[in-house]
Image (tube, rainbow, N blue to C red; front, side, top):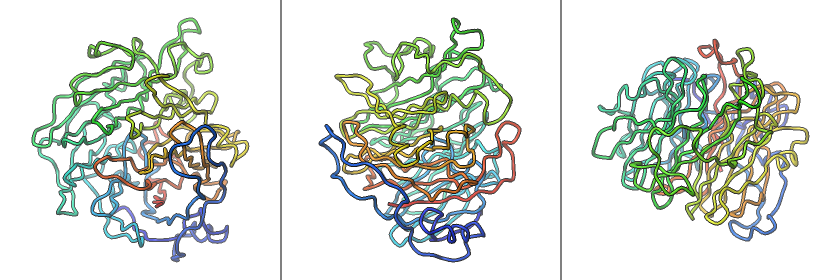
Length: 486
């Protein structure tokens, strides 16, 4: 078991003295968390729909573990929170590289049960993704790093995970599972495949409720050959349409032999993954589709602000490789419109994109909203998206002081934004009390699930340092895993 915890004040709700107590080991129960430190914003002009303007709510916060790994609540494409019979099931990766889980009563709140799923994995990239079936079964895909995935399920009448016979050691050279279940009970899986850590490919597989996992299909081949993030994330809409977003990195010959353009693309399927298409194109994709031939979310003209003329750098969190961590997960509103956050790690900004039939992809810039509560901060990687029952879009961003550019750097904080259906930002708040020498990062926002709807999404995050990646992917760093309820 990777650590135990209970209801306490997170470092976002007491004062500095209580935060110090938390840092000394969280030995005292301090009650419910208070209101967030900073808030800004109001109802957006020209955005009449959605929830009325309201003050930010007080949110209880729980410590789930003190032995999370340095990527405990990563990665952006993998959902970490599900609900069953009014309880929360949360998952994270421990410092021993085992996938941990907890059963939480959210109303008191109270930690009911905690355990692990499967054995130790290769390194800190091997976290799990969870999805909810219409019959209440939970499905967990345990991740890998250039390896194979393992599928577990928790039946509706049990509180334990069991291996799925046809789901052991599936997929090859696989990393970053993104898993979703549709209304027919079919599971859909998207992931990155890299043989030998090169030639990234976007892959897809599916499993009907009473069937077996299909053979994986390569949907897209990358335009670059080097080791790359795809930030591949799959989601399902209210009428069953599947949406898949992913990073689309391109070489830029005119800018030099080592130049890279950081863009992103979107695919959809209206036949449960049988064929895949793009908006504005009549014909389905011919698989595998070369990424360079696909239309892009940000537009098909190469934006100079997204071009890095010399790709590379020393191994570590400042390497150009991290500039490809470009996207949040997608969320789909009640009208079937996909929403996704697209980052620019060169300018340290981001925009929230939504797709309208009439206007195509429409962007809402986010940096000014962040700076309304944290002046001088910029936006880091790995934003997260979900929606509320009333239609409000919720985003959580990682942000850092202007001088800090590394992934998971000290001073990294989390900012929550509430957005109306026309893209206007209504509220902005700081999620945690600031700690200059301790990052709050790797947010995992509970996904909207049409057959298990929620009023407001819960949030997992990591409080602790980044060991540095690359040769440090296997490490003994311990972090804290926090659950914030709403």
